[in-house]
Image 1 (cartoon, rainbow, N blue to C red):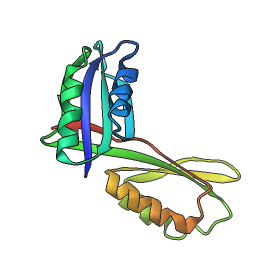
Image 2: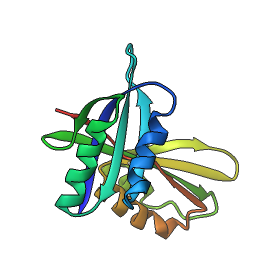
Image 3: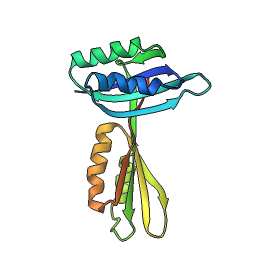
Length: 153
């Protein structure tokens, strides 16, 4: 089962290493990991996507609470989760229908030059999965996907 955890941690060296060590030391996998400072504070938000049964998830949350620099762990309740994807496509491709696809996935053209365009989309993880499948028809040269970010509502 896919789970998203957000932890507010003290922004100091070694915190990310401790979090990664917590997962690797117990044999848990991190599907995605995103870290960014919380504006105007001494904290960072760590968004972790992992998978496992309820017992594994409870262990992860308990261990995160035990980490000294952890201020808060958000593991349930209502939240907004988003991911972003960038897709590079050659200008030699037929772009019919691309505008409609971008609109339906909160997407846009992020950059272009004489050889390629780079499109981006921002949506929830399952919709980004679908967007990537749809974009395969344009023979993408490269696809880069971010990790999830989340915020409680």
